[in-house]
Structures are given as structure tokens and as C-alpha cells.
Length: 341
Image (tube, rainbow, N blue to C red; front, top):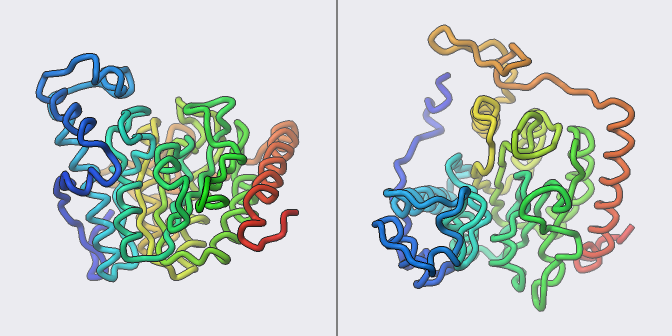
């Protein structure tokens, strides 16, 4: 589609994340175990660290793959620090990786490490996570810090992995009020999601005034994802990205989950188009090599068709979303001088 062409954009080859940077979050013992497992040597220590499970299998190039994906996000952080307004690594967003445990398809936490690197030069970094799963690994990394605010919009842990991310998980010690969680009910639709985003994220952006935003934009929020239960269209991603771009704050973007492959590819292509200043409307009927860009129920191209909720869905979703917004305002907003109601 020519979206990588233009004097204002370029494609960079990543390099593996250096060991010294990885050790800023992950323990040396964990990194050694990960490398040994990739070389075919793993004992019970690796099992206790989450390796060898269906979602975190061991394979030959595991360590090379994980460090390269992590290095790509770190390269994006370098570009941002060097003055780039936007950087995008769709192969990033491994927000479930913990200090010494792999889980949820995640081995090394690229976004936590990128936030640490950015915080070295910036006094305020916001990690904004709209993957359908709670960003538990990143929250762990910054739970007692205030130089990185973590804001996660996700399907409620009552119905989805990892089972965390309630509004009362709001930080500890110096970080009280700087971990923000907005759990959303199954079948959340576009209008309800954007209402929650504008009620929580927008005021916090204004008051916290981050110098850089790290956005994880998992495509598993979309309707039809086999591992989640949401009803969003990718039009929400355009709205979110455009609002963030309008803030004029440098934006490091990563992918995340997304298990309907066709919908995920279209969503991330649309995200990149939007980051480049294109709303995606020009690609409604774009084709490559005679193959139309379409989903199984929409012949339109990059943008999804608008989905209108029925009254039953709207009533159930709206009540739960209102409850989450109220809980966040009561728990977090007073720490930032914002009204609790």
C-alpha cells in the first residue's frame, strides 16, 4: 500500500536488546534460564519460571526471538529520544512478562524496559495499554514509582486472563495513584470504550502531562478475536491515536495481542496509516496484487464497518463501564487533584 514510503518515514532493522538493558527489569537467573532453554537445556527451574507451557513454549530460537522483539521496541525508544515524533513496533507489546516469569505469550517485557529507558531522560512517562488483557507485568515494574504512570483499559479479570487489573490496584508507596486500571465488561462496543477513555485517560493526560507516551495497541480488543469477548471495531484505534497525536507528545507505539490474523493485520496497518496522518478513509477499497483488503464480513478495506449495539448489550455494558469509571475516579483522581465524581 506504500505506507512505508515517504520522506517523513523509514523502516529500521532492529538489533537484539543488550543484556545490560534486559537486567534492568529481568533477573540474571531468569535470562540465563531462558537462554539455556533455547539451547535445549532446561530443568525444573525453567518450569517454575513459566517455560514449557502451551502459551510460553520452548523452541530453538526462543532467546534470539525474544531479545530481537525487545530490541525493536528499545530502538523505537531511541528514535523518540532522538527527536522522532512517532515510532511503531507491531512486533512488541509483551506486557505480561514478569521479572522472573514468562506468561501469556510473553518472555521479555519490551514495553517495561522501554519505559525505563525513556524515564532516564524524561521526568514523566505514560504507558497507555489498550490491549484486551491487563498489562500486569508493566504494572509490576512501576507499581511503586510515579515517573511512569501505567494506564490499562482491558476486559475485566473476572472473565479473562490474567485475572488482575481492578481499579483498587492503584499503586503503592510513592506510586499511589499512578497505576490506573479500567476493567471493561465483555461485549464493550466502540462508543462505550471511547466514553471510558475520555473520562479517565484524557483528564490524566492533562494533569500528569507526560513528556512521552508508550501506547500498546493490541488488536485482541476487536470483535471476532477468538481469545476475548469484546465488540470493538478498529475505528476506535483511529480515534485514540488521533487524540494522542493531537496532544503533540512523542508517541512510541507497539502491537500486542491479536489472534484473528486478518483483522489484526488490517488494524495495525490502519494504526500505522493514522500515525502517518492518514485516517484510513483513502484505503476503503485498496487492493494489493488483485487481493482486496477485507474481513470475512466486510468488503471495505482497512476500516471496519460501524457496529451498532442492540439495546440489551448497550444496557448491560453501559452500567458496568459507568461503575469502572466511578471506581477509578474515586481511587485515583484525588491523587491528581481531579474531582472524584
